[in-house]
Length: 108
Image (cartoon, rainbow, N blue to C red; front, side):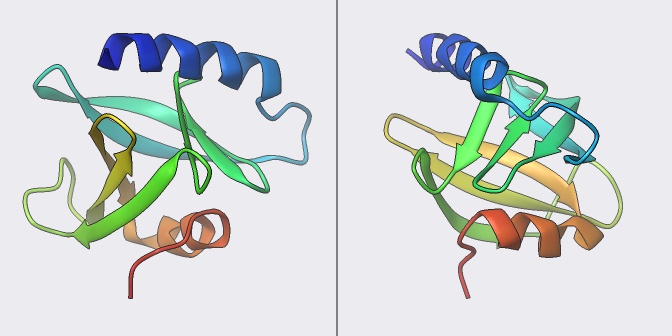
């Protein structure tokens, strides 16, 4: 089922993803298939798209917690993003939290 949502997210990301020079980009890792995978983040006004595959938005789910234990890289934090059927781990550099917080509701 997770694969179906990843494919659907990829299709939606391509169809509705950011385009042009005015969109912000960054780096982030997602924990898939038992390992961290690197990808590019596209920051839109209401969603973040990872590697043109996974959509993070308040409409898709919510950030349950932010932890800095065992991140894939130094100075990264891991966001636990709960979707309807699973939890996706998104790792971003600490400096990206302000941009992430502008798009997603973060826990206190």
